[in-house]
Image 1 (cartoon, rainbow, N blue to C red):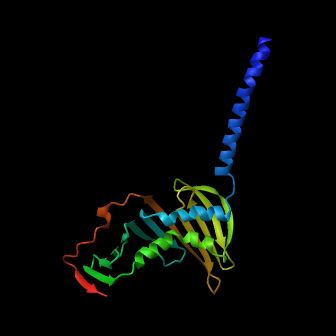
Image 2 (cartoon, rainbow, N blue to C red):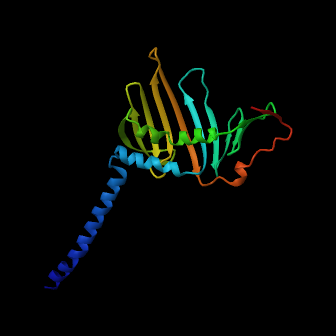
Image 3 (cartoon, rainbow, N blue to C red):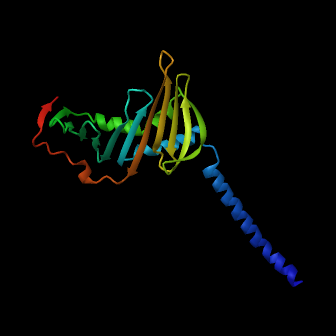
Length: 220
């Protein structure tokens, strides 16, 4: 009789354990195995719109024989941006843009309409724009780890172009984007961009207006 009571008392515990295991399994499936549809991916990509403090290194390469890899280092905060690459530096705020050639000691000053900030933000939001377009067909590929980041891998394509995109499953940031297209002579062109970023780490000193003492100033 005592053994029967022990068995009856154990039933709720067993049910709780089974329920917990089922819940964990469902969460795991939802996070790691369930395919994300276009609307879910679009919601994820839209997170990038609200980013206002980011440092991002963008590595661009293509499959052309005479091309070389380019690396652009962006820092954006408080509507100010600093950009560095092998050829020049750029500083831009709400009043002007300054492009600096350190080798020639020349600084070009432009009346500004935030074109560099807009261009950078468009790069960050390029996956969202593709998802909003009716021109491209969406296809979920798989979940994949890219550069240590858990990503959602999907494609957006039409008859001429295919975009392979890896989005950070947490932040919605692009980690890698491949654009495959063909020229008029049927030659395949592949442009690949890698995004290495950190959020909320840009300091005020990273976006200070540069000191142009010793530089030739050219206003354009």
